[in-house]
Amino acid sequence: MFKQICQTLIIMSVAAGLALPELCHAHSLEGIISGEHRSDANKARDPYRHPQQTLEFFGLQKDMTVVEIWPSGGWYAEIIAPYLNESGQYISAGYDPNDEVEYFRDSAAEFFDRLNQDPDLYSNVQHTVLKLPNRIEIAESNSADMVLTFRNIHNWMARDQADAVFKGFFRVLKPGGVLGVVEHRGDPSVPQDPAAESGYVNQEYAIALAEKAGFIFETSSEINANPKDTKDHREGVWTLPPTYSSLNDQEKKSYADIGESDRFTLKFRKPE
Image (cartoon, rainbow, N blue to C red; front, side, top):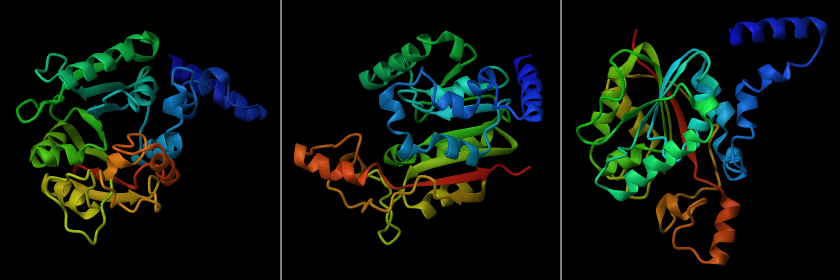
């Protein structure tokens, strides 16, 4: 109903030469990204993560069923879930709230607490668990229009589980469904470390992982590129903001000038 009302208001506004109605703007991708439910700290990362351009590149639509992999603190969830809340379905394939590892338990609890603070925005969220190596059934087979993963491939490589995870993505996507990937981009002149200990993954290596699982590589974007990132930092990607691993105050200033890591943005599709 809301969607129909907004479409009618938009048509009337365009015909009258007026701005987009505030009610509808609030439920647009742009309106959600600028929304008051997002903290200043999260908004401060927008210039590095380019959420609107990234999600538009992947082809996100309001009526899609979308699975986000390991949403962690919910940086992208607080954008995608409200956008899908009226007409689509957001599914978090997150950490196990009963995990034996304290970090995963605490991260899951923080994520749920974040959603519970704004029930009107997240009332339609569904939760599943991705826990390697055994719990990779993140949604029903052939049920999702889109699977999105942001800076996670290196974690799966470190556990030697990347092949299994990509196969899981392939299984849950509908024929024609989209896999959207953002990851820290490695130096192509340096051979890929199979464990990705630096956090960097070579773009061609990531493409090969997805293609091995059956995906068709569709296109790439430089939306999240950062040419200032030399990729040779002593603590890998975690030397850069926002982590600043093992840096003193003077070093933090120089690394703040670099910004967050150089990242590739890739779009794959499951064959029809």
